[in-house]
Length: 114
Length: 113
Image (cartoon, rainbow over the protein chains, first blue to last red):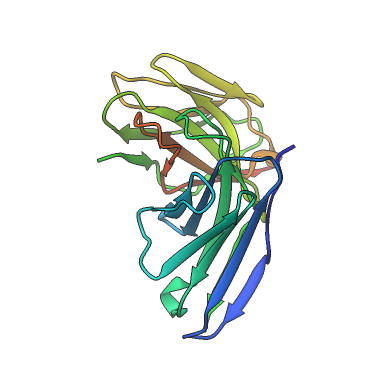
């Protein structure tokens, strides 16, 4: 079974702090994704990566950056956390860039910024 | 642009009732279509998918048919169980083959015994 793990289930940070969310997948997948999930808005893509050291902006990249130094690990960085970044963050991975590939999701990190 | 619209929730049904969750999409070309499910406290997992027009995806008693003429991918189940209570997301992958998914807003299903 594919396993996608995220470093924390719950996180509380203060405004202005630098926040790191870590994601690791164990199936040698090429693609990795970061989404945020908000009620009534579904999932929105923040960034994705289709190879080590490669990244592409998603639909809502403002206020975020990412890092992919190793194939299995994809980090989401909030340079200076703000209250409007309070959300559920979901990481996913997929085998390749085929439009038919299944994305496998981690359990999510619920981030609260005070 | 590409978008997915799902029916508003929450949907509340009694056990063994028939379920329909509507999903329509806007896309250029020939996208692939997916239903993902999120059980309480968990991440999303794939429920079913269809990759071309008139394909029917099915899994765990759920099914959905890719209807290009009506740009729809409605989810159905003949007899729901309490364990089906979850949030259901319709999604499309554009035909540009980037591997990206575009999600609908999600529909919460609550099944009562």
